[in-house]
Amino acid sequence: MLLCLTVSCFAFPALAANATLEKAIDGFVRPAYAAFHTVAAKETGDVQALCAKPSQEKLAAARKNFVALVSAWSRVEIVRFGPVTEENRLDRILFWPDRKSIGLKQVQAALADEDATAGNAAQLAGKSVAMQGLGALEFVLFGTGSETLGVPGDPYRCSYGLAIAQNLEDMAKAISDAWQMPDGIASTWANPGPDNPLYRNDDEALTELFDVFVHGLEMTRDVRLNGFLGNTPDDDKPKQAIFWRSGATVISLGKNLAGMKALFEASGLASLLPAESAWIAQSIDFEFNTSQTMIGHEPAPIADMLSSDNRGGLPALRLITSHLSELFGVNMAAALGLSAGFSSLDGD
Image: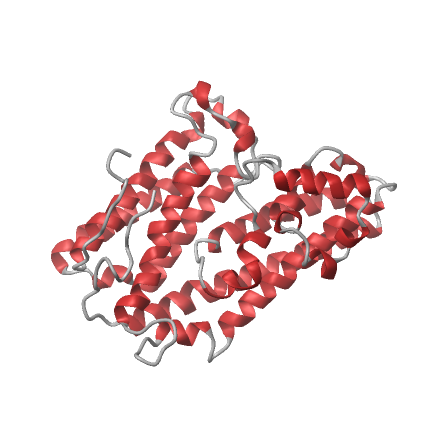
């Protein structure tokens, strides 16, 4: 599903873009990427401790912080432009969906062959994107054979996991540092103008912010939810869900929506609406708040959730994301004087 929300489809009215974008950057983007870096650094430390002295307690700690790392990433991954797109970082952090299990096969091959280059963070960074991100680390920590990490005797698996964790930490730091630079992407985005290499006017800069919500909702619903959630229980495919091994599927979905909610609030985008359209922001707040009350905050097997009476509330969550897509892509767009192009929202 693609909604045409680019400058070629509409023009934003002359609005106070600079203030809105600065609030988005300082109130959400910078702290969210910094938090991702902090949790990534902790995961490196936890895996390093596990490798140095394997135990069930240390394995449990590394697994617990992996879920925290998924949470931190899922909250900020909606910002899919800027430094995260450089050096192929977006796919290197999370290669998904892996429809043909290419990544899984590569990770399993590295473990079976004890590929020394995959156990070195610097060398791993140059290998397949599917071998060096959250999906690979999840399999190392939770996949078949992972129980050996809790006892001495499987140093390669742990060294590979440590290389992945270090690689994720390095990328998280690079992205966070780039957003903190006073003359970097933050300044470029918040100060559109004719000499700006990326954003020539307010319309283009605000479109980048608006697209975070439009495309973030599409990703959450169409790629993540619909990737495993069928129209009926018989159509569900729990092992096609993201992070199913670690039980972090619903946590990740919830953090995607929580990130959009936090960005919406931090940016003050609602303040750009005319008074007669204030109901749109109120409706958006209501839908975001409802989504958060439905989401579990502890890891749980997605298969168990789908087998419950209401399938973990996931069909309702899918409906909420469709409502939000309409509120952003249709109602808010119209209220701000936009004219959207083709959308397959109709019939969702």
